[in-house]
Amino acid sequence: MTRGPVAAEAGAPEQVAVFARHRPHLLAVAFRVLGSDADAEDVVQDAWSRYDRADVSEVENIGAWLVTVVTRLCLDRLRRTREHPVRPEDLPDVAAGGPDPQEVVVLAGELTAAVSVLLEQLTPPQRVALVLHDVFGMPFEEIATVLGTSAGSAKKLASRARGRIRVVQPATGALGAAPREARQVVAAFLQAAQLGDVDGLIAVLHPEVTRTADPQALPPGTRQRLHGAGAVSQETRALRDRARQARLVMINGRPGIAVRTDLDLQIALVFHLSGALIRHYDVVADPQRLARLRVDEDPGAPSDGHQESPGAGSSR
Image (cartoon, rainbow, N blue to C red; front, side):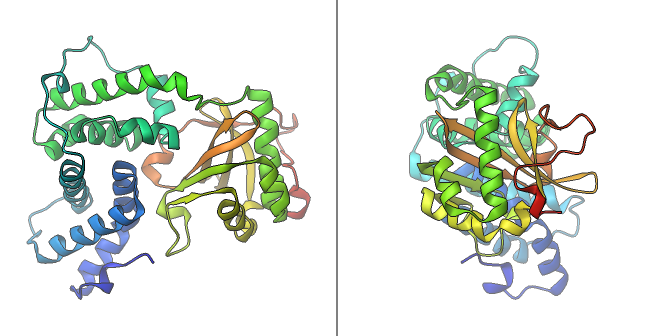
């Protein structure tokens, strides 16, 4: 069960309101760094306790202050549980210039099960630098404050992490099927989701599928990670009303699903296939993560621009 700040503390109403406003983003950051719902909840609850006791009257940006507290708590937890030593190669010399923009765009939408496994191989500072910059778009100057280092060193940490993932990732098959086949699978998933068709969902989900999601996309108390076709299909069926607002799009050049309100992107589903089955999908709803995604119209949509998604007849 997701805990709110009031569950453990009884701070001033204005403090509770401020923290509640930032809490979904803090949970999203903690979960992406730690990879565990329970750990993320514990860290955010600890951050509330520190916020409740702290004098923040001189703090200009409470959101940034809270992210710093949460990330440092994540670092402490990673260091305790993984005991990565600090090694010289943690701060290597790298080629001049920034990361490949396309590479950053891909990583921004791809904290998949496969990438999460790869993140386990990184030191805690590398992991924090990569997640905060490539996933949430935090400037290296701010990451340096979190890590207690220089902006240059923070950039090197992210570069080192990115390089390790780039070397190993091709073997994971995370990109999955070819675009045409992937579109067929994602379209079938959307149709089944819109109809609440559990059998149709099971047909396109890998038995060991995982679903990760930002808290902003979930009902209160819902886990950020689900595992198994049964659990994922049942949740998807329960959310079929929301699915009826969705449409096929291209996300970072690959088939995906988006939910928009007027012109604003609210939710994006990033899929990763194993053969013709969905092995993992990530429900992106955190505003900072959404801003890192490139979402384009589905090229298979009718030329008049009014896409009729599979099963959309029941959504209009």
